[in-house]
Image (cartoon, rainbow, N blue to C red):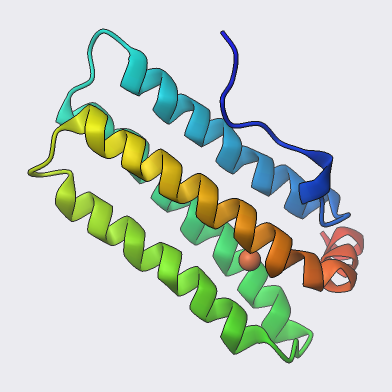
Length: 139
Ligand SMILES: [Fe+2]
């Protein structure tokens, strides 16, 4: 089966640790698409895959923010606000999951998440390449 959400080298922040974590988002988005196209796609299935995206986003953003704080990154607050937009959108999706049709909502979540992720990586994370490279040496 072809994967819809594909990693591209243009998304690299030249850090093994962060690139691997970013790739994990694409894996989760592909799992969402698989579920949406599966014979059975219940509201509980949707909540389960949304939880895995949410848990991973919180985990990954906290790692980035901790490092930015540790190294006094000057755009930390701006970067954190960008993460906050995604964190709060995920909470909204969880609320919508209780009333909206699972497959339709999954497609919305996939589209939004992919768009946010790629634009965040290209516009924000790629400005942090020196910082992320330091992480590789420390982790
Ligand atoms: Fe980020």
